[in-house]
Length: 137
Image (cartoon, rainbow, N blue to C red; front, side):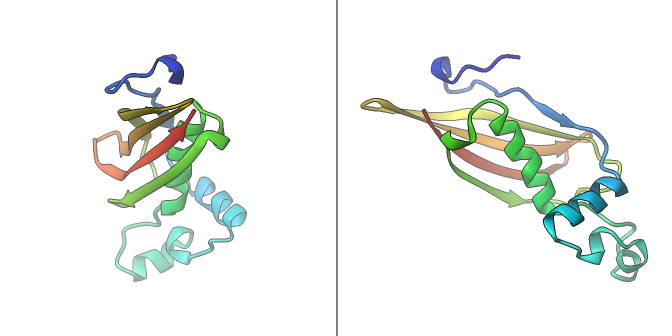
């Protein structure tokens, strides 16, 4: 699916970004890259002691995937606002889909502002993150 900001209309959907199943390796690599070594994300024994069945993904990792879905269609310099609300835990093995829809377009002089409503959900439809992005073109 191609998405062209110049011809975007309210209701248009951005191309989905599907993320392969979340793995322990992904969480360990993200912990190293981000500096977020919270054991709830990488230490199974710690997670079980905390009452969880297993470790789970960093919320900011899932937000980064959603950000990538947006920057796949627009240069990062055009992204003026990006916010999310964390809704549920992302478990090992979850397959995620990052998606979005144009909900507002404003044209003011030579600038065009596009607002996207965004979500990340797993293969069962459980919403992990919802949010919005504002793009200026």
